[in-house]
Length: 345
Image (cartoon, rainbow, N blue to C red):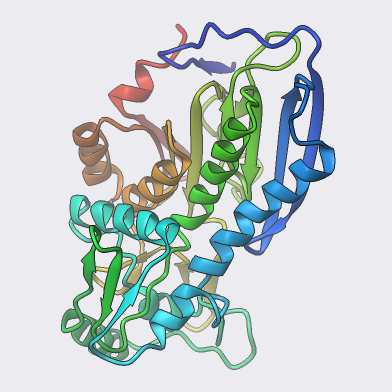
């Protein structure tokens, strides 16, 4: 049985009768991107090649400003900057960091863009990775020492002046928000080209607007949990009409490593409050939101909080969220009231 999720607001703008479905694709942020759009061939509008270049440039900008894999990015230079130095931020970087800090505060630190050193310590950063020879998981003493150091490093962000202060040794990591922001930039670019019907995807995060040539919305399936035993029962599939909405999923099955000595499975999602990978039995959290940046980062924060505190925050913030929790040999599903309101009964 498939369940259907419908947006609560639907645009009355019909797809153009002479629209042509076109697909563009490329690589960015260590993953792939795809755009399906309905081209109404408006006279004077950018051509096929210009659209490909324009779309790629949107993501190139995100990488140039916010990549923690690139030492020459604005973020990379900030992470290496002298203690006490102030740095002017490009508009996009400032927008993303400002929203990330808002979610950090609202989640009580369950998400923290300043936790890059912890991410690196656990082998999920750009160097000394968990999947490279010689990597060893950190000891509790090492984690505790790093948490103590981080507690003394406070980020000062002046949004009005678009500048930020490096306290010394603080490492920003915007990987939980930058990909979603990239999706939003692609959507904004298409809107600016007077293209109103499209489906945008970057590394599994999606945003849709308008409809397909047949008038149907852009139907997408909410992500199921991967890596479960074949006989494991999963909740019925959910089909979402991605019309004026974005969707993002955070899952502990995407990147992890197994400590063979301890027999412990360590997820790539780190709880900045404890310095440890999450162990709350949440397999995934999916968030549906108008902005993909918001869906992306909120799915991470709710995953760290766990099923009970995460659901409470989703209700407080008015988020449409689905929680899938490991329960013995099955998955237990919990839906926020905002997501329940989207179900087509």
